[in-house]
Length: 413
Image (cartoon, rainbow, N blue to C red; front, top):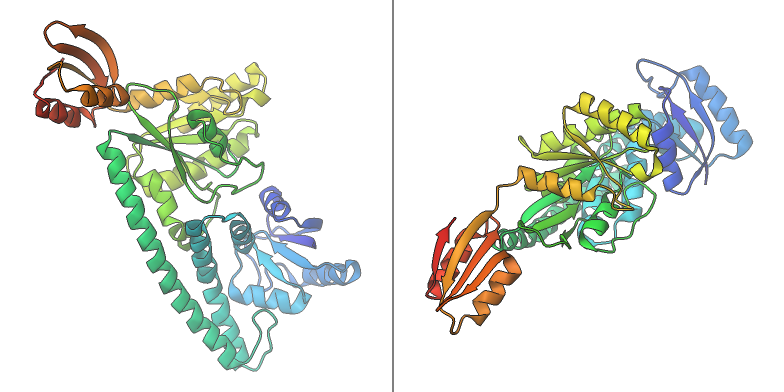
């Protein structure tokens, strides 16, 4: 579909990428720098120019580089006589296209209905005054019925999402019971979160060079066995200036950040410094909005695309700006991922060391379980089985309890 971009600010790069991601072609941008938008978003003189261009070039859709008020949307659509997509609607359309799992589809549907509510109210107001709007056009009763349907559907979706959330809570409690620590991979859209998850866990999450390719979380175990068992979760990408109601719609997905023991903030190091800074601050704002005192580990991704000198410059600048140590990595090649893992271990509780004595007979099952869930440092057979192990602090009490139940002795060393 051929479209145009309307903007009252200079920077349209992100909107262009979002529109391209939807499969539309931008034929022209109309930029009029203004401190405040007008009832038509852009000045009336500029609107005349845009209308002429739309009619002459058979433009099918206009994309606005802001969130529109319902009255602005109505005025623009009526005057230009083509569909008008503001920035939020563009993002919602991308979400709808990317949502594959049931939970993501419900979250997107909830966000779309929440978005439509004020626009339908505006239509209702206009219809009562005798106007005939195009989008969702119809008589007074048609619009009123649609508004009631939106409210009913929102209630129903929220109930379904609560059921899914309860199932997720059960899975989380089991993971903690088995000693796992949760690490959430967060960051701006298209920072490489799914690529990092794949490298760390051996998963095969589809990686696409487009925004919001991940809307559903995927949780997997670290493929390398360490002293502390780790589970990694990738999350939906952040994006600036999203309304709170839209973030609320994805509450259950973003909750993975709130409940995480460690949050990896992934930043795309292949971008310009000012973009890196803006996206990092946007992401940190969202992370701190979700969790009061998060354990944040910052990683600069995609360093395989840069020269070493450039990596060092960007690392120093970002550390100075953010106040966090920044680890340059490549989720594609695995460069410095070992350093990232060490930094994660550094912020988690120190593993416990235990000395266990077990009767030799009838303990094959518990020995197999210990081997699976802890690192065995030393074996010794001298009348009984003596084992020294390193284990997750979260799993310590469980190991002690099981060993004592099996007739063994345990000492913390």
